[in-house]
Amino acid sequence: MFEFAWLWAFLLLPLPLLYRLLPKKSSNQSAALKAPIWHMHKQVSTEINEAKASRLILPSLIWVLLIIAAARPQYLDEPISLPTEGRDIMLAVDLSGSMQAEDMSINGQSVDRLMMTKYVMQDFIQRRIGDRLGLILFADTAYLQTPLTRDRNIVSKMLSESLLGLVGERTAIGDAIGLAAKRFKLHEESNRILVLLTDGQNTAGNLQPNEALELALAEGIKIYTIGVASDQVLSRGLFGLSQQRADADLDEDLLHSLAEKTGGKYFRAKNTGQLEQIYKILDQLEPVNSDAVKLRPLTALFYWPLALAFLLSLIPALYTIISQIQWPWLALRKGAKHG
Image (cartoon, helix red, strand yellow):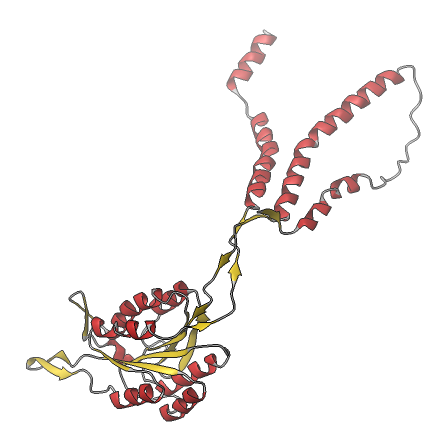
């Protein structure tokens, strides 16, 4: 359906006409003397008025086009119904310094833990059709990067732009859970799920994990914890390569406890395949019904009359430029006439 968003803008159409009707300043000159050639003066005045009227056609057309553009013409498509059921899932991703350990691999190439997390979570995010997603990043403290939204592309973009060390080097697991509980509290009808990815233990923050657990239980949040670390990693020392434990700092007892007490599940992500197991679990959860939401795609059309008005406004300038050019053929023609 075609419509104008600001139909009242057409009230401005007669504005130039009203300006011309304003009373002009009185002239001090005496009235013109009547002469026998008054009919000749009348004919000249008529020709001048006709010339003035013709010169007003282009400005009038430009003015009409500008008013049409100001009225914001637009086209509305048929209404589209958004999903009326889904889950509220908050993703909490660890950005501490230990996430830079390169003990993961993607397609045979060694990568750090954060890179592997991004790789797997991008597909996870795109699969969450109908769900609302939010993103929390944490290290020394936790902060909300993206509130709960159905715009999966913005969540995916915010995750891909996250950097190690952005909020410190340590790990504030308690703060991340507390922030998620605070955000979920704003949504009454919600299937509250927190997916927490970390490779360490709680070493920072203002909220201890046991205190954050109480908040999560009070808000009915299910926590799915994911420990991101392989068993061993190769390190180069004075005597060549040696194997060391890569999960020495991973507090699996804490992650198990957080998941078990909230009705969630703990995952150990040693590779991409193990991390993808969370898909099947979340797909089985009962979605929550919500009020139906309808949107009508809108296409703005104001730039068409605006562009045409701009092009028409260039005509007088082009005419002036062209008329001032000394064309060679015109000079030769004038010379032939004088000759």
